Image 1: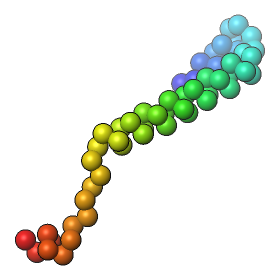
Image 2 (image 1 turned 180 degrees about the vertical axis):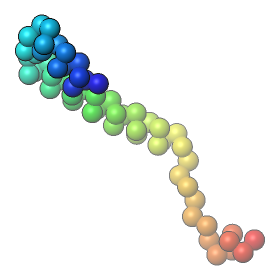
Image 3 (image 1 turned 30 degrees about the vertical axis):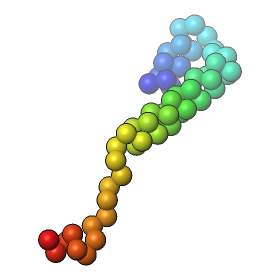
Image 4 (image 1 turned 90 degrees about the vertical axis):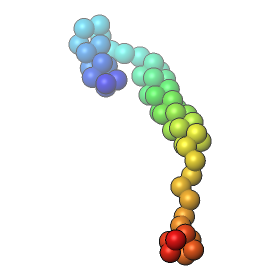
Length: 56
């Protein structure tokens, strides 16, 4: 989505400053990492079945 928006911006308003583009890209990547860490922290880890649990 960002790349499409950047292409649209370049066609309508002119070239976008590389610092802005890099900042948005880093913010999106960082936000994705934070959301991923928060979601996996909430979910309990899967437990491995032991031999006793499999036969029960």
